[in-house]
Image (cartoon, rainbow, N blue to C red; front, top):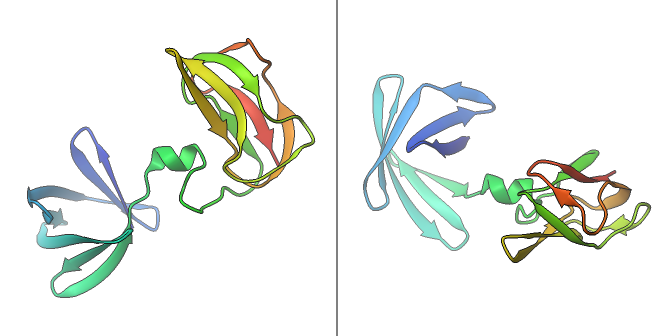
Length: 152
């Protein structure tokens, strides 16, 4: 099950199927969820790194995954699979290239450092593998979404 927030509204999907659902936090840790005209109350409590969600007496475990972290390859132990294009998360200037084509690289290791608004941001590998291509050079300006490298 996936729950995403967009424009203040919760969107639900189970196994990739979108649900006609609506959710609202009515009190701290208590949510009212409307699915296909039926209303459910969900109580959510944090237990370490997991959430315990109780709906109609049934307990479920849930993990919070920040999609932005996943896109940057920092998904808490999760690795991307297959050939991956590493993209610039923001416009800026490449100030350092940390890997070369042909290098073996581990997941979450730095590939390129981009400077944006006087801050340096290390762009990391989403997976372990081989650096197939580095498509930027030091000093080059990049736009958000530009492909910086390819990892195979």
